[in-house]
Image (cartoon, rainbow, N blue to C red; front, side):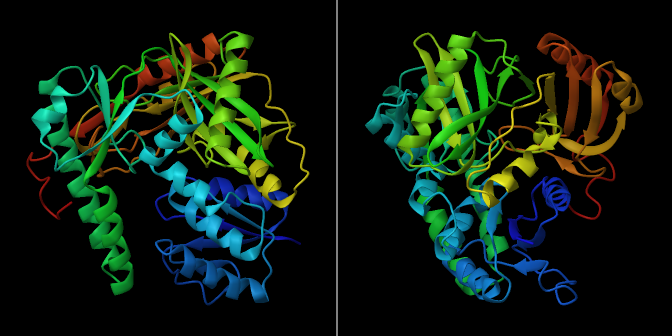
Length: 438
């Protein structure tokens, strides 16, 4: 029975989905995570503690393990582990994206440079530093523009600005976000001297830089695809019916199949494929975000991973195969023929965090689940959890899933279900919130 190494960071939503997918496929599974588990000694082939911050070291760890327990495929399940996954596959001589292609895709500035050099339609951009004179920067920018950090995900730190005054204010806000994020990263790395040194190097490189990109108006779409030997197969194209015009870019509803014309969908797929080739990505899942501007599709980003959060639950293929099963099968079988997505319209809503505070209670959950077309409502935030909305935060309250006869019916069901929910969020600083710390 082939063995699959699942790279699962402790922060991922997707552990259960991938483990269950592997079990359905009947493969042996080893879970690689950044923290050791107390049960590792009881089943040493099932759990492997890896140094995700050092791909070369992690690769050696896996190679030593694979000498006794051969590994047939490596599946990184989130953006945090795609680089270490590529390094491991390179050492084990498994099918993979190159380490260089992952490095280009992970850094937004390097991605923009590649797109500019290869003619991939994408926003005009300028690399800026928090140490630059902000008044000079603001007066040299064309508006509207979007400022964004180089490495954060989930629209964290991404802010649209329409004037020089807004630009200066937003850069100050971004500086606070980056300082907090990299401070937390450095603290978490301090458990080991070498790890802390590597983290400090990463902080120096990216924590003071950001992009100022020309805002591209128009609808946004998300393409979920699979690369095989450099050829892109579209698994699903999601419409995003809510306008994403800023000042922050919190995503909410995804619906597939797309309601765009076949010609437009074909152009989008061609553009995403061009972007993947430009980055030299060749194998595995990609998640691409594109804007449909007046001149056609414009690539916002291409990620060498599958769709995030719990959103994959909105997709089924063939006779009921999950996206996670499809990804594992593709990693194991070089000639695996990708099944088509099931034709029924489906969608997901990522429940936005409306305001900051402590999550106390959710009301109307039973009513939300009873809406026609709704398949499930999952609240992923924990009671008592401190909630932080965009642009400082990046997490959602939960996910609503719908399936119906048309994209319009799916969208309506998602909105009606969301309307039934009431989230009780107690503002920070009210009586009792400070006890026990954060």
